Amino acid sequence: MIRRKEAKDGRARFAAPVAAALLALAPLAPPQAAEHGAAATNLPAPGTYVLQKIQRVPDATLLDEAAAPVKISAYTRGAVTALGFFYGHCADPTGCPVAWSVFEAAREAARRDPLLASRLRLVFVSLDPARDTPSTLRLLKSNENGDDGHAPWSFLTGASEREVTPLLRAMGQDVAYEIDDSGRRSGAINHMLKVFLIDPDGWVREIYSTAFLTPESLLNDARTLARAFPNASSRLVEP
Image (cartoon, one colour):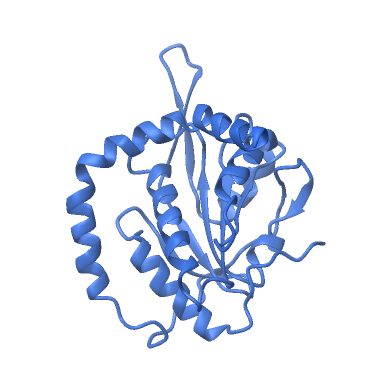
């Protein structure tokens, strides 16, 4: 219980900017929900369309919450995977908080969906290794994976910014570090929100930006992949 409380308290401190950004989104929630609802009614039935192969996810060595080196392929193979890049201090209401909210909604819906319950995996990779350290990720993982039956949500970071950069470039995830008047980094990282839907063979099948990222669209496409890969499993295979 103490550990659980520490995890929640730690995440609360860490994610304060994220929470503030989510609160800032609150006034926009009703029209956004209406738009999502309308969009959802226009989605084709899962399995009636094909998601083309866009690119392979390049392999890279990152760190897990235990600071152990891991291959990203261990987290992007075998399951239907939604992967997003984030940083914990992001306060852009059109950025990381959107992906966070969509992942939580999709995860809750997948829990009640027999097609996705054991096939969907969620992965967040940090853009900010200096602040999103393994100990921080450990708190996030503990908080987001406490209930049985939810899709596993993994948090990865790099040993350094330099270690993460090749992966970002290969995935087309541009980032720019904001500079203040003194010429120092302000801590803000400008980046276009992208979420990648990856099939069990490690191919990116869809890329969502803020304009197209909704729980309904992500789940619809995930169901299409789950039908195409009935043997997919969200269980991580230990190296």
